[in-house]
Image (tube, rainbow, N blue to C red):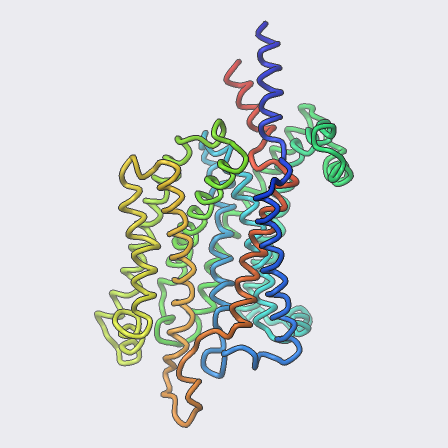
Length: 438
């Protein structure tokens, strides 16, 4: 009787967690993302055809919304190392329903972090020069190396954790239909659920988790060095590495919370992504928001206290000038309001958690824009005898279209992965259920 009950539970788990076909809302969502990506592709075609003159970037603001997007994607990709690696190595017991989601976010984000750099170059063929004539003295070369390494490890980590689930998807082809059966057989047809293969897989995952943590810290630290090694007001800081890493953990965790809520509602996963998971992630978000708020205070208080002439105009523009509305929006919406929502138990329920997660992600994007643009408008040498449009920057429609297109592209990758593969690990869920029964 017990074995029959266990078998029925196992079948129910598999049915609950199998990838689901898109309904009407899913098709509209996917079609909308594809249209946005196509508009972005058209804007990029115009940029390739006419050059970077179609953007509003000029001699001073040579990094604009593209690099803001790059820093945002690199930040949110850090969630793969937080949820998958750190939680696994720390043996956090409630991580299972969140790991696959975080891995999908990490892979999609780092993919478009790589692509947006190529977009920013203007001449994509010049990317080859980094490999043919690269110099290790250049921080840009360090960034290329760590991004490439992090992408490979993240992709492999997602794949290696998927293999047992893919094997189950092959067996469930009658329920899934034929669209992806060849893909499943190619990716996981070799898997045999025996103790030897499972032990090797667990060992590989552990090695990857150990590797990805320093690489993840390096990717955001090196990205911060691209700014900090440039002698400009607002960037000339030894705090930038920790400042970037703490912000990346915050936005990554916020992105996972948003994805948890969306997948829970769309795929009816209330039994697997429970209120307890939102409560735990809410506690973590409060901690990460407080940590990032500390580094923000540190980042602005010390220059404001010393008030060097070169820093004065930059800080004034952020606190009370042209960018003050955006600055205080990013601080309040991205950190302070989420803290006040999440310190209360009622605020850690799914709906307020979703709202707080959206606020964290939106605030983080504007924060990255503020890191890049205002600083570039305050060079150490004053702007004399230059055209009027050199004194300000606002992205052109091509820049907006390409940037929004990359955000839509990242969401499209997550959507496609969620359509093909389970968003919650079937294998791990069943393993944990069996351990509880034993």
